[in-house]
Length: 359
Picture 1 (tube, rainbow, N blue to C red):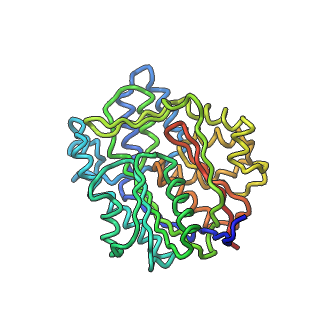
Picture 2 (cartoon, rainbow, N blue to C red):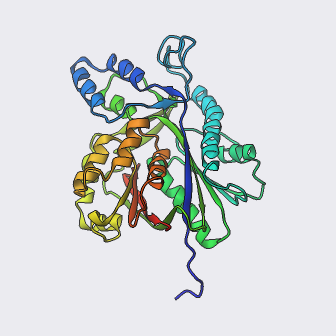
Picture 3 (tube, rainbow, N blue to C red):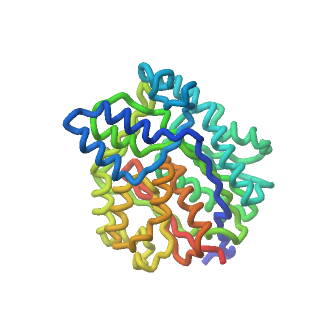
């Protein structure tokens, strides 16, 4: 038995930011004109059923106010090279991250930050996004930084889990956590249905959170992680000469549902509780079919995933930032007695943690 008292870590507040340019319907028009003729009707139906109304991009509109795929836009001619995309990331990712921190500052005191944890899988720059943001915020050089890269959609779990470990080991720690993803920098030229449906999901967004030992917000309980066997090919990023090419298999929702039917996996996710005893679900809004798979496999009430579905409708899938957007909405809602945060990503892996209202 430990001689030291347990220290709890709390997610005190979350702030979020998205760019001003809505590109969702422009993408649907662009992709619909490229998909193979025999798949056009299916693509249109899937776009209508996606549950997504808006997706936001750091890519600016053209001089005429049109989208990046219009004449004069970033994607108007040949697909830009990775260097051009990373140059935009180096400029836009810090700016959007700072917007999220500014939103967080309206909800929490950000004085005395001791640690900075940053997650991103949609770009590379050195000095890193963590250093650029720390400098812009005027954080002292003594602040300990960690950059979590290329973990994909569950990286918010890894970032918040790391913050929890830091606070539990250093009770005076004040950890600033940032997730920033610019998925729209990685449009690919293709006529194949599956990659176009994958690209249909993704938008840009950033979220910032404060984790301390101060008891307000959500208490962060034990984390969990599991890898689904024989599934590593279902979600992939490939770095190409024209950006990062996403592969998101249509098999993912079924594999998630199958996993949640397994007693051991279900027990891991719910910490042994009946799913109906959980009154706060923060499920990564990876797509309507993924949310449907979780809801149906756990036989959840129809409104259990409402925060996730509303984030999907308003923003699409913003990779690692998405889960933080969901937690922001839950923090603004009724108290949570038994909550579960859950995200899926490359591996195919599932990661999450329990949480509950501090009061």
